[in-house]
Image 1 (cartoon, rainbow, N blue to C red):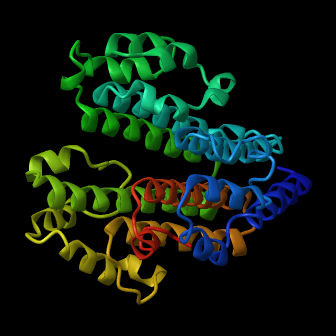
Image 2: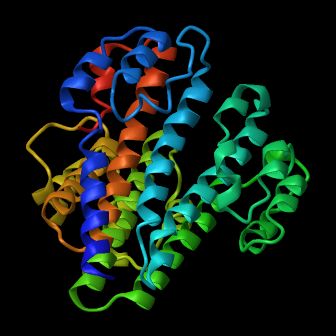
Length: 345
């Protein structure tokens, strides 16, 4: 990659990130009590003024707002990808795989819940030109057979076919989520191995290994605490490939009788150096905070384009998660302090 392209992508990433919401913005947003007030506030922020300029504050549906926030992030990512003129452009398009996974899973959740009208506004119509998935068929899918038809000419067909069922209530969501997640990480490591070497390759692999490990720990916590899942069920949905934590250590974590002890494990593990002394209430918050701090470190100090780009993706995902939690908090009239406990900034 030329030095011009190198500087352009890093400069552009940092420039866009500079327009992300600041701690002061979140302090103000959590005090808002209506969706219209939130839209009005976001319209005044540089990162959202264009995407929301035609949105009517008093009539916008929360699903449509979430879709626009995701579109805004994806548009930024596309702008960065267009600056790549090197052979490793396939790595930068990895986010498309993640977007495809999320859309497929969202469709499946809608089929299971039978809330087709409720979730219609959430579907990303902007994504159709960037994926081989037939988005028109996917957005119309009401059963598993129609879902398979939408992904027939893609790698997802072979991934999803084994879970086929005629009864939406019997869809094995956790197994499908695991299969799609495994595919995403296999693609990530394949692309890293193909295009990078040395310390750059090692650092990129470490970013994804950390993400896998934090994701696994979060799954263990949630399955134990909220579903009292047995060890076999838990192990079956973990991503074991590419993981640095030994299987013995994972088994130890799974065997912890009190799920909240997992927070103690995180606070004394190798991840502890990335976090503050704050008393975390949610394991998702702890895992997210580690991802956030690592991403900010790469954003500010790395000079390697793939690492800065990956950091930008992570920080963008976290802002989307924050705003989604705020939107849900407003919908269910959750208290200011409880919402703040879920936000990472």
